[in-house]
Figure 1 (tube, rainbow, N blue to C red):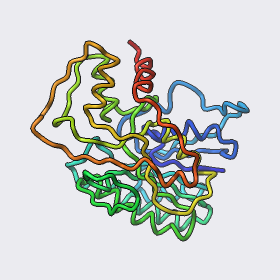
Figure 2: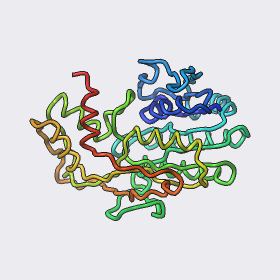
Figure 3: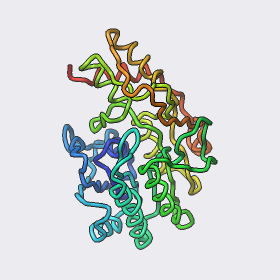
Figure 4: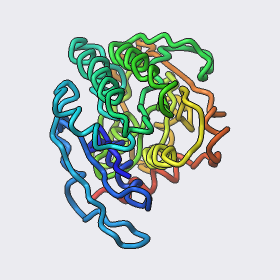
Length: 312
């Protein structure tokens, strides 16, 4: 089976590719990425070899844009399944450059769906969306909550979902609304709040908290995201929209965990008078009807392990 991963060189993409190499049904992975974040870590450090039977997988890299229709269609027609992870992302909220978000997240997804519709070989589509499509809420949200995006990023992701939804009746298609991703892998992003806190704590011994720190957010570890996404290749579940989160924290809760690791930690508030947007997502996921549930890992344990990954 040949799998196309758009955005495969990114944070989640690297984790997914690492998971897929252990799937014996996968013979080839095509990574389609424009490297806009200058993240080259996927290409360094080790060979991709199946850990179980030691077979080398054929991994091809295609440097391309979602809006390069000819190049995109040429790789889509070779794929049996498509993971669409490529997106313009800013954490925590995108507030500028609306045209770029519309072009990449909305119309880039539209081009991909058009290509899949004309590629009968593709038998499954997984689109990584975001819980930011729900906007801000003081109530616990779930898949039945009406989306109300309040950022350029959230709006562009929701518009992209509309294109993906056209495939529901044609092939198994899953829209996965993912929470804030954190945790170590070789392509990690340090603009994500938990990762940024860990970097600042380890090397500066001081972290910056934006707003009053009381805002709540939904989170999930990048390793869990990779595991769940990879398992969808062999999961028989209906085409639908599914949330993917496993923790809800106030930012100050995260600060307490980091302080438990770095005892001499200082912290400062930036624009403390601002109450920033918050969103908590029900962790009793609809996915659990089709996938095994998991025990929530301790954030302290995860961050202790994260700390061991720093070089000094």
